[in-house]
Image 1 (cartoon, rainbow, N blue to C red):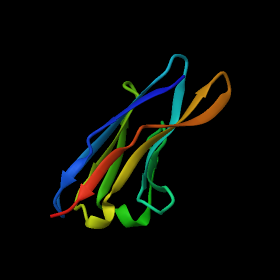
Image 2 (spheres, helix red, strand yellow):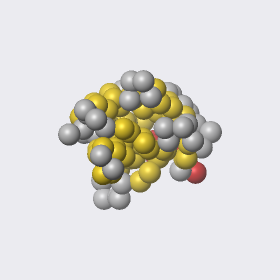
Image 3 (cartoon, one colour):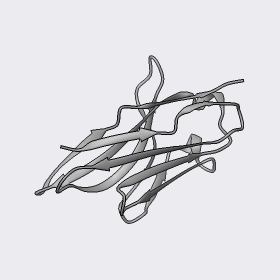
Length: 119
């Protein structure tokens, strides 16, 4: 089984910054794609950013130039540095990993961390 621990959410003023972290663990697993999604009430969960084990990244257009995803493969940890935050970034942010073990692949989700951008 894969365990995931998220941290770093909170309340921030518009224009501020936050850094989210997500550590994944699980015996025998390799974590290929790691990423962040977000969800607001009444809306579908949307992709924010992903990063492969090789470091290739992908971002939703609305966060390009403001958010940076990175990972530490030795620690199986993915980060999301969020800058120039706007009220529209307010959401619950979920970490996602695509884990592989014995040629079987599946997605795992973190518990979610709330980010609120408000004065």
